Length: 212
Image 1: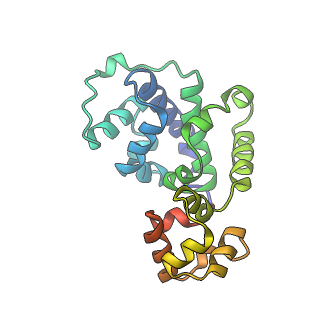
Image 2: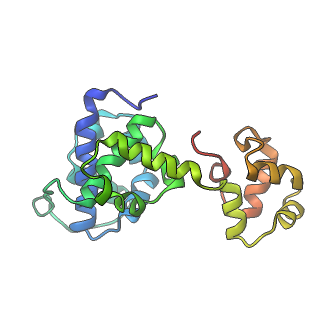
């Protein structure tokens, strides 16, 4: 389901493209750093839900200032110094990200679990002249090829499946099935997911499969 009316889509893409460009080239924030602030401050949730204030009522510059203000970051850059030319990989990254989120209706925080902004930016050269739908097809295919989040978190913590089972109290068979995607972890018992998340030092939502 698309996130909001297509009537607002162009403005939303333009605003997020300009925001990414300004964040990277005027405020000297990394794209992933700005995206994390965008999500953490709640602005991403409002933007993704199609709040008129963000998708049609604010410029990208104003979006950057709002995010930074909510994050408690004094960037000390006046509006006049933050104009964007609407070109380049940073702008394109925000532009196609807004389209991807709109097309799928997934929250930005969900998208952020499976890719980085730098990964999106790196697709600029092969895809910036293609239709936005082509980008969505390419990035969705990449995401689908990746391993289960549970396996990624387990390996990051240096745990074997047996060790995770012993520490969490979740059966080894269940862990194997979740990692092999023979069993849908999104439908797992809350108590089991809680114990796995506590053992791995992450949130339950970090273990869920994409798409939700």
